[in-house]
Image (tube, rainbow, N blue to C red; front, side, top):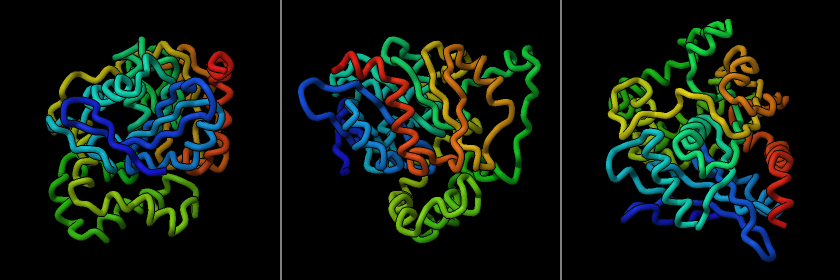
Length: 305
């Protein structure tokens, strides 16, 4: 499904992939948000089935990613991403929507739910992403996890030495090979979850040096080397209903997920473990993801019909 450019603020556009249901009515608005190192392509296997189920489903490339415009103001933080997405809601005529995300997309969704609560009906989180609540977790006796240096070395390099890293990745082939590592030996997903053709498709957007550099910006925010447009609203629980699916086959997974989720998401359903899935569940297990979203939104779909 190709992308379409939609203006979300004056002169600034997001590229979106959209599937709409057949027949009368507009369907239940459903926003699908990608993470790193992905684009909206990661949702491709789910778009048509969800549209056929009755959703008006839209998967955008976040600013700077895929075919979307680069940030006109230089900001790549949650508030900036969500300013674009509220502009997208307005352009689509959406008052509120169900929002699903993984990785960066899940954190953007969490910020959106807290920043614009009247516009988010419920969340679907496809990994162990959740608000940052260290004091609440400590009060509940949940140990604070220790980062794994060998796993998160990319975060330090992208966040602290982005330009130097980009100089090393000096050709399209090197840039694509770097991104392919996250689908391969870095073990973010089960072995052989992605074919050579899959990798050729999913890494192609990152052959462009400017696109790869833009994807590092969020890590600069995380590491404190890039200015934010506004504080991130991930320091409080999400009050909307949340469905949480977690793929166990990934080295990035944290500890005490169920205990933390109960605090971070007071209306959580799950977490449910999806065997054979890792960090890229929309691609790895699209049928499970589609069924779960349909079930979680069954009341909305019935009303829309």
